[in-house]
Image 1 (cartoon, rainbow, N blue to C red):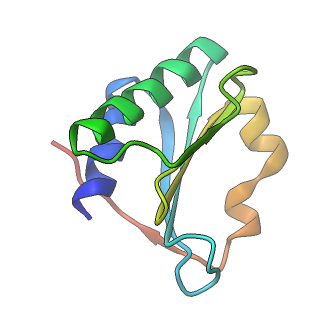
Image 2: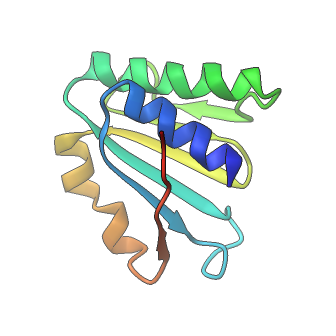
Amino acid sequence: MDRLKVIVKALDDKRASGIDVLDISKLSSLSNYFVICTCNSGVQVRAAADEVEEKMKELGEPPLHTEGYRHGNWILLDFDDIIVHVMERETREFYGLEHLWDDADKIEIEIE
């Protein structure tokens, strides 16, 4: 949970909104958690993704894989058991990941 808290705080620090943490461990072998958030622009998407990457590197856990950085409307950061989706509002609404994973338990993460 500490790593999830670090990720959520990093996203919150960059003013990402609609931060959802989904426990997909019982639904998929892909990962244990999805973290999904909304940003207002490509610049904010990159800034939020950069912040998550930096904070996780400080824990000694750089992402195993990153996708979408060039386009900037949806950046995926893969930390093996946690996959972070940083998305522009229109992209998030179009793909509706929460609806695809609506059987997943939503986890509330408290940040200071």
